[in-house]
Length: 229
Image 1 (cartoon, rainbow, N blue to C red):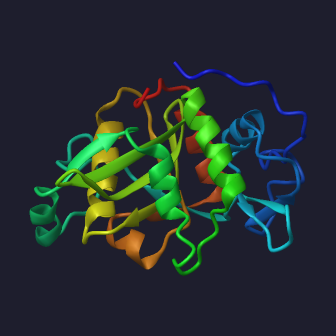
Image 2: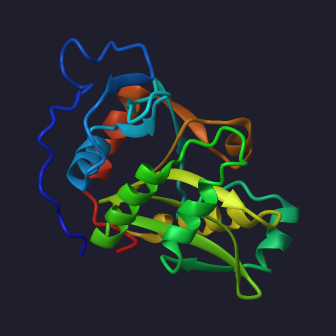
Image 3: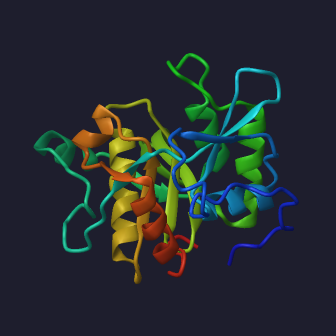
């Protein structure tokens, strides 16, 4: 069972509140910290952090259009849209859970990646969440080598995906399928959040939902038991 950390001392914006529900920007707050209690409080409110451009600056986002992967327990791949070539590729990967969390985050933080945003503060904060039982990695291994994966935060029925990487073709997609299968098979409402929809994620079945709908789905999902531990 995850360990609940000390509560955050910060007041984070609740976009369900009168006067805040009409917020039209994806970025909704600046400041606070990356302590475990702050992160969990933020995810429970539909927020997630990213570093700003200034040293030590911390930005909080709640996209007006949220990327979500609809899960389907009746579908072979849990709801992920799988091509025939991906189906063949998946046979070559072993999917593991939480055997190399820090390695996955480090790979996602590769500074040579375009648009990279994960810094040392982020890595340490999510490693702490992992030690407490809230953050998880789903990994694709081939011939004993870590070749792809993703990590995110699970609170009840919410899995908030943070980032993914691959060193072999289709490895990150295979990890996503492994995650979707595990979540879809678990009891209770589930919400697989990927922050923003991209063309790549849309090809895998990710859709956009308005913020108000996302928050409604979130409230329901948080009541479910965790699926990953």
